[in-house]
Amino acid sequence: MIHVLLEEKLFDENFARDWTNGPLLVRLDNQQLLTERDLSAAGDTETFLVWDERSQGLVSYRPDLGYVTDGVMPALMGNHKVTLADGKTVECRPAFHMLRALAANYSPEQSEAETWVRAPDVRRAVRLFAGERPSCYYTWSGIEQQSDATQTNRAISIFYTLTGQFDQRGGNLHVANTPTQPITGHELLSAEQRARRIGYKDRPLGPPGIAGRVQAYDVYRAIETSDPYPVKALVTFGSDPLIGNGDSRAGKRALEALEFFVHVDPFANGSTEFADLLLPAATCWEREGLMPSFPGGENNTTWAQLRPAVIPPLHESRSDLEIVFDLARRLGLNQHFFDGDIDAGYDYHLAPSGITVENLRVSRMGMRSETKTRYRKYADIDPRTGRPRGFATPTRKIEIYSTAFAMAGYPPMPERDGALARRPTSEEYPLLLTTFRLMQFCDQQHRNIPRLRRQAREPLLEIHPETAGALSIQNNERVVLETATGAIRLKAKLNSSLHSKVVATQYGWWQACPELGLPGYDHFSPEGANVNLIISNDAIDPISGAVPHRSQPCRVRKVIGN
Image (cartoon, rainbow, N blue to C red; front, side, top):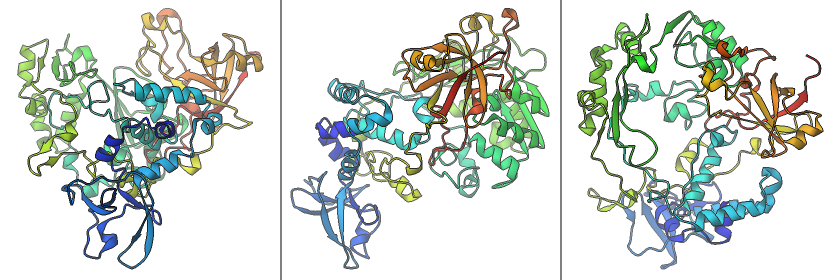
């Protein structure tokens, strides 16, 4: 799509020149941005170079100060020979030129055979997106659950950037939210301690480094091998790790190896079988719940509400927050948890908005903060510098060339990973498995509720009629879905809207519904329906660690007999 956008000149050239780092020159010998340090031993590494079309020479650009002179017209294209401080001559190109050269290898006609998306459809989509403005895009787990998720997302973001619509009304917009201050406690950890997060060493730009989260398979490995250090205890809240993450068998081995495992949940599930303690969690009706902002648009994101409990907690159940605060007190961390006062924690979180938790208790419908959404915030003038604020990146521009990726040793342009470039289907596993959520259920929950289960009674494998016919499979017949990791059994559902090489199923099947006489499913049995039992964690995204839940090579066969 970037290929078409550039080839047909559908991109916003002014936005690319002014608000991306596309004009910054890249050395072709080492693929690094050209800096003043390259030209002079007295120069610094934070001042970059562009080629000025007006003066036909190099001009310095510093993120905090801008261009060294006014009236610069930075070039987006061109090859320029530059003499370095050591006398060596190197060839340089603007990052935008590098992107164009990269995209030249991916015309829709070239990619059609590999992506299974028709070239005319790609071209029509680009023309529609770039021409019918405003336009925006929405992404969620489909793109993220791929082996090359991070660079794919970067490519999509760059495509959108080049249309020039970012942070504008009707486009992808940073809407105003109720002002809050973080309450996750990330600032309490030293840099040294943060670097010890499991998975950080291998993927510093992934969840361990950015959001402070770890991947399930990294935790499994640490439990079993003590690499990078032993993990001996685990506390989980309201989840089912073995059905919600790839390679359930590896997860089972890890949970069995733990010295101490506590699970907090309203329900016992397959993972709780391995817990030393199962603590009853209060449901959402038995506890308060604070929402400073609601997603879904400008009118919602500045609305705060405190949902009251409908009834007191039943039996021995307690809210997650009460358990966490009490555990913190026993661990000697009370001072970091507001001396055990949950309301004080809420007020700390809400403080920038001027709203208090008591305000919200009185105003049961909620309250709106006074913050208003503004557009093109990157163009606002910073009073400290007198220059536009730009973006929260090292170059103050949207980065076509990612300085963070280059520093971490990843390709700075949105290149495909060579090890992941080939489609994983083969003669042995000729189909591609993707997974999806059923609208009736929230992930792996609620299949025990009759009203919902009546609408989706059993796990299905959706398959194209032609593919099913070639395998002698009829609608509603039992089939085996198999990957190199294992096999499960499902019922076939013909779906002509699928590509003939793609099959699709849902994850999260385990609960029974006794009222309807419908069974539950064993997490680990090949007779069950746990699709994560057959999802491998081997071909993960090297940057984020994403597991390819949406692109597993597989095969399907009809069940013969029982």
